[in-house]
Length: 64
Length: 253
Image 1 (cartoon, rainbow over the protein chains, first blue to last red):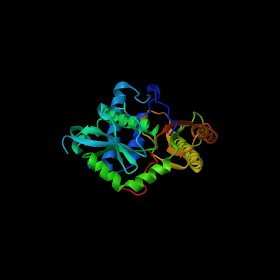
Image 2 (image 1 turned 180 degrees about the vertical axis):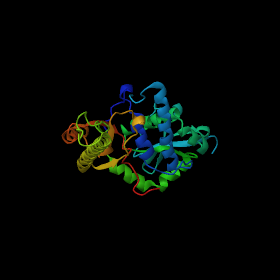
Image 3 (image 1 turned 45 degrees about the horizontal axis):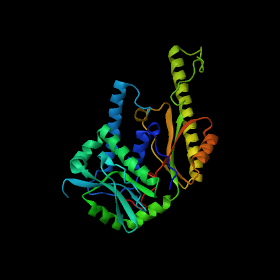
Image 4 (image 1 turned 135 degrees about the vertical axis):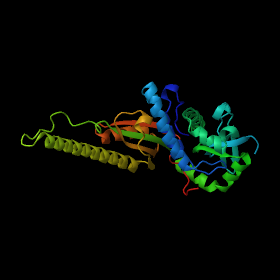
C-alpha cells in the first residue's frame, strides 16, 4: 500500500522516534494484561536516567 | 490461559503474506481474521509478558529496544502490503479467543481508523534551534562606566537573559508557524513533546516534534515546504512511517 522501502540497517529508525510512536501513538486497546499510562511515562523517566548513565560511561549514545 | 499469552502488533484490513517474518523473540507471526479485519499476533511467554515481568522489562532498555524493534518490524512489513493500524506497544491478551472477541467488539471503530489512513503515509518532522543555549557574543553588551562593577554585571546578565528569552520566543514562533503551515496541507497532524536531548542525542533545542499524515508523493512536497518555512533552521524529516500517530480510535478505550 504505502511506498515503504525495505529498511536497511544503516537507515534504522532512531529508538526515540520509535518510542514516541509506540508509547504515545498506536491504537490503544486495553488488553487483558495491562500496564497503565503512568507506567509508560515512568519508562521515559527511567530511560532518561539510564541513558544519562550510559552516556557518562560510553560517550554520546545518540548517533545511530 | 496456560504459559503463553497473545501479543497483538496491529490490526489490518486483510491478511498480509508474512510467512517468513519473525516477531518478538523470534516468534512466528500469524493473522487472526474476524469479519473483515485481521489481528497480527504472536504467542509470547507469560514469564516475559505477564503484568509483573512486563512492568519490570519495560524498565530495561535492552528489552524495550528489542521489543519495540520487533513490533516495528512486523508493523512495517504489514504496512508495506496492506492497510495497517499499529497497536500501542505491549498490547497483550490471554489467548487468541480474547483477541477475536476484542475484534468483534471494536470492529467499527477499528475499520474507521483503518479507513482514515488508506493510501496515506506518516512523516515525522523535528525542527531544532541551534542558538537557543548560546550566550550573547562577547562585547555585545557594553559596560556602563558610570555604574559600579556589580551593577554592570547584573545589567549585563539581565540583558543576556532577555536576549536569550527573545531568541527562544522567536524560535518557538517559527516552530509554530512551520507546524501550522504543514498541518494545513496534511490530512492530519499530531505534536509530540520535544524529545529529551540526552535520550535523542541531538544538539541544539528541539522546537518541534510532530507527525503529519500525507497523501503521496509526500516526502518531496513536505521537504520543499519545510525548506521554505524553516528559514535556515535545522530539521529532520523521518518516514514514511506506518500510521502510528493517526490510526487511532475516535473515542478513548
